[in-house]
Image (cartoon, rainbow, N blue to C red; front, side, top):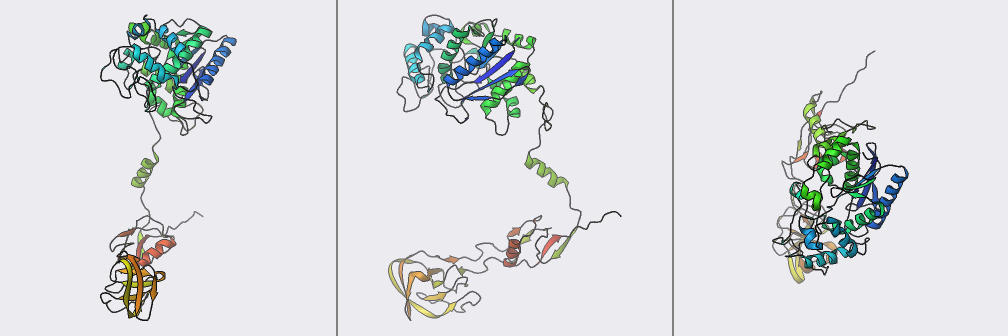
Length: 473
């Protein structure tokens, strides 16, 4: 019935810039069941020009073209007459076309929505606006709607949004306000027929779409670096172009009277499985890695879990001194803490606690503590002792003042506080506590692992025996 199928994911916002983005306008064409590459269109002016070019190209080729747009073509029953004085949905199209002045940046929609709100009874019905916008549009959804809140299509479609909501993830209200004037212009220029208000008996047809009808198929077909909007128009264009004349005719005929008269309808609503089956057709073509419908690749983590559960080691284990390159057969557990005792992180002077602000003159005792040469006695209260980096802290020392921060005389250390208790001191077991697991079974030992074993007292480990290979003569 249709030689070309074009699907358009619309946007109600401003120009999105030259770099392709999500939540922008995306378009994709399909012929003979095969879709082309999705196209990014940064604003509605460029989108209108591109759609015009596609229509003219189809006409030069003597072909019929069906174009789908992902926003409602009409409003709930009764709204058109309240809005324009006539139930004709195209009267709303004409009114919006007259009101919307700038198709590029989308700022007109707030004022237009406010003006329509003022003309209709009750609060709203258009709602949601940024705090910076000055328009007669409530920020939150009205408690009650004096006009219809939902079209019949939304009542039958799980997850669909009301045409009155202007913003928020998934909202379509702004798309209607900024999309209908484009459709009205194209309809006037090319004599396009708009379903379901008109019979699609011309060479250009417009239909309303909602890609989420086949959201599961879109998710399966979406490429790893592909925008969701691009995947949606690609998959849906390809699916609709694969429908048989009988299948498409059944979808076009299955429309409630209220939708045909003024509300509009979503193509494929009630025929989701037919659309999904068309989307699945030919999925294996030109893809040597593809799987049959309903079969998916196992996620990496799940595949690794299966390997761990099903693979077994073919060699035994042995107790050895830690060696680089050997594979652990058991976890390595620390037999001592690291550091084994509280020690100094710097060269300086050990104290019994912190210091308050001010200058302190602290008596200095004889002797010192150094790495490998601990001080045997206890530090008297109120005194200081010389300590070096890595030295075990003498009993009574909890804090170390940095060497550069003191003046030293023969008998005293002169320090200007404050100094936090515990400064420059490392607690016993700060890196590893005794009994902690430091290396897991299955790990290949590295030079750093050998140092860790030495530091935590693991003089021996259980490792896998080395494999032995033989080849036939």
